Amino acid sequence: MSPDSLITHFVGASALVLVAAHAAGWLARRLKQPYIVGQLSAGIALGPSLLGSLAPEAYATLFPAAIGPALTGFAQLALVVFLFAVGYELDLKILGDRARTSLTVALASFVVPMAVGCGGALLFREQLHELGMPRDPSPAMVVFAGIALSITAVPVLTAIVRENELSRSVPGVVAVSAAGVLDAVCWTVLAGALMDGGGDGAALDWPWRVVLAVGFVTVMVLAARPLLRRLLWRTRLEPSLRLALLIGFALGSAWVTHSLGLHVIFGALLAGVVVPREEGGTLDPDLLRPLHDVSSLLLPFFFVVSGQSVALNSMDGTGWAVLLAVTVLAVVTKIGSGTLAARLGGLDRHEARTVGVLLSARGLTELIALDAGL
Image 1 (spheres, rainbow, N blue to C red):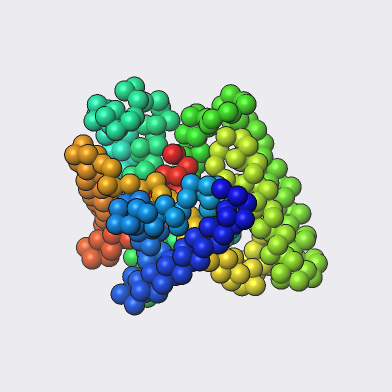
Image 2 (image 1 turned 60 degrees about the vertical axis):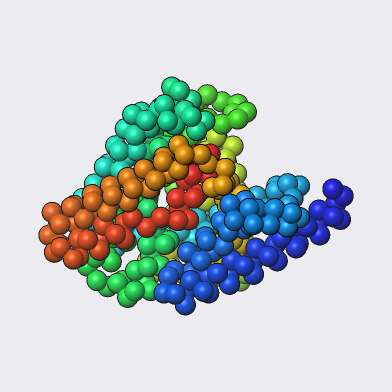
């Protein structure tokens, strides 16, 4: 494919991705679902499972293999911006008076699904081997199976809480704060699994990567954070220039973690966490608003790239059985553990059940973790 033809296909595919994803998001909101749910659905619909099955020639024309790297590049850029904003917004001070209950819920909703996921990977290794998993999975693979069941999609959960006016309710506060703690734990464990698993062409053994990763985190917290505070608070940079510099900072951090054998997601999250808030501890709206706008605009590229990996029409009976079992386990363990922990924390039956259901929110964060593991 010539460069001109490649550009033409990429521009056309981008137009379809943006229009379809945001139209689906608008429709989801009309159906009282989070906007991001519609975007997720559109991304999978544009993949081989639906569009590729119903109109294979159109699918091959719209998404030729040659534009795959360009779509992936846009998807990674969207991830970095999105997770940079997530890290910037992360605030465990929201725990407040419900700190003990939230921590208990977070711990339970991590340990139970983690144990079930890891146990399932070992118990059903023969069935998983038929789907392409090694007969003797490595510790990293087993841990990843647990993470896949444990993680909660904080952006989806937050959207549900906000759109259903639960932000000031006890279940809303407990669920959001517990999910924040849970996310931090899951990303840390996933980072350890990726360190152990390494990556294609990794130049360093995992102990060296761990040492370098710890050193990088230390430098970011002890050196980068004070420098950013001085830059953001003591100078009067234009909002557009400040946004560009911080996104560049996030991209650089993502590049470092990727070079260490981790995924770009960890560098982006870390960059967001170390960026200081305003002097009163509040978020800077002039920074947060454009971050949300940019990530919302570009995230459909990630959904489409993820959707290319979802080929439901190629699964056999074993694949469907495993998919059903994993889905049931993921929902039951998350809702059950979250509900029981919230109940033990003093919430009534309805409030506890609400917390459990909210913590079972999946979607974008789950896809990001799956993409890193893949």
